[in-house]
Image (cartoon, rainbow, N blue to C red):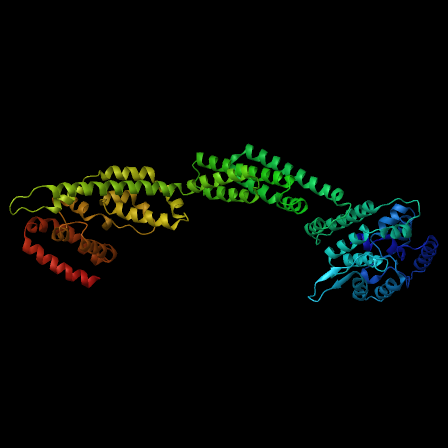
Length: 551
């Protein structure tokens, strides 16, 4: 620390409390050494604390700072004082010999005690140890293994005690009116200045330590640390607001920059005044509201421009950052509402896709149930049977699948698939996949080719086209043999055969050739065999065995 390493008392090699006569004699002695180009010996500069290069100019400058009482007091607060010769002089001898830790132990034992559990406590400030509090604080600030917290506490204990008057009288004459508050402010302001200059030092820990102590200058000293960060934060909010209004497209970037730029100031303010103080809660809410507005403006602008980026995710991240800063109820509620809205909008493309596909399936299932109910309620004459193939055709034709395809193209355009694919909602994704498989199973070759992009997770084959639609392309009355044999397109055994077709046969050249041949022959076989009960029974028996085999 500069206040110690370049202290005027150190430069001239004297302890705090040295008389004017001692000072004059020491300065004269030092000048003679320097003029003779020799190193002064046996003074109180303590080389073990760090390098000290003395020149005639530096000695003159140091001497000038020890002429006025105020300057002497400022310097004395950061140098060693021989207030108790019995103990202090032993520590000074250790420092002269370079044994910094031995000196520290001498003073530390005078000001602290340890209980049976090893916990350290501060002793009361008395005439036997008051200089030890001061000297231990100075040494703790400068030594490599020093504890800044303990240094501050020890110094404030000393400066808060009535015995500090003895320190003042040893430094200045009787006319000096320095009091506890003034000494504490001088000490803390200088220490703060040194900490700011030392990049390795921790200013937040410094403020945290002060916030936990009680001393007469606390309110006056902390006042500056409260107002400064508030002013800095308000300036950053205004800068962000101007950026956002100038370009809503850059709102997310501006909001993120504000969040990062105000983090340290808010932490510092919170450590000083506390999390419930109005100064902190008010400015933190202001930051949260501006970050949230950046999120909202960015989202709305991206939506209006139909951006292809994942703007909802970016806006959500920013809103959640605002949530971490919101303190007041109004701000918290506003952030919460925005997050809920963004959550809904974030998966909007997937929700819309599910809604339209589900409406198609629901319409199909409704028509199917209605038609089946009507067919089953029809009276049958003697030896009459229901032609389920025709019933299936009625069900398939109950929806205009060309219009379904048009609707899918409109509601689920290709550009939405990337957003759907990247949605982090497994339940909705599974629902979407199930509905997509259902709808594609009802479409024809040409219809599937128009919308196959909605099935992004696998390669779509024309074989996914429903048996009913494929057969219909060959002949309006045609049908798969299996559907004819089991009486329903949705029969479980028919589903197993379709699964075998799509997952096994369709993946090989020979399999696809077989499927093509089957599609060519099956409509004619159905026309010949559809009313042959014995033949259908035989076909079912054979297919049952085949299905057991493929399972």
